[in-house]
Length: 196
Ligand code: GAR
Image (cartoon, rainbow, N blue to C red; front, side):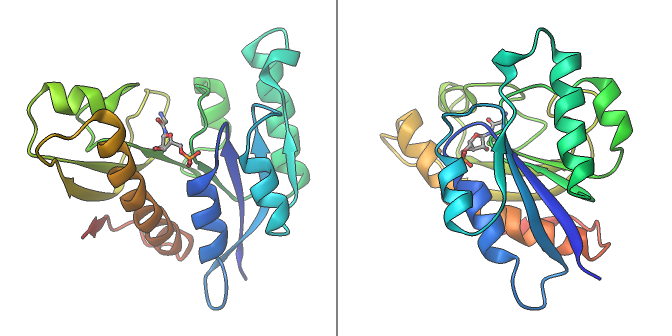
């Protein structure tokens, strides 16, 4: 029995594409839905191009977070989602929503958590003079960018790096890390993945 995966995005969806492309053959999961909080997200077309049902639940069309989350939850349950992968989903989910999906939501964050929760992670790593940077996949809990770590990938910070250059290097690592973690997680193994 393969596990049914929904991927939540807000933007370009490159992590989403990497996840979808990984779920073939003997992979223990399959993508059943891509859901975007922004109807203009480029990732929606990338999902459709890969044959995965994709839809927007436009956050701006809802009067508050609670009603937005009711719509997201309904779409997830309609498709029978069992695992939710946040992939560049730039909305903070409430504790109430998270509690309804406990242990079933993963997120990728562009830093080596617990360093640099929140935004502007690459600029902060450069400002801190860090020798390395990276990304983390973790289980989502009610606290922002917290929760048990399921995998990390490290990249070097190079002389003359800008935040954009570092972000691009980290993003490549994200595309390797997230599929590796999802494969393991969907098979019921929560042992953290370490890359490279
Ligand atoms: C990725 O770098 C992801 O780690 C980050 O947004 C980018 C989305 O890129 N997520 C966050 O910052 C979450 N707080 P993508 O849409 O091309 O996958």
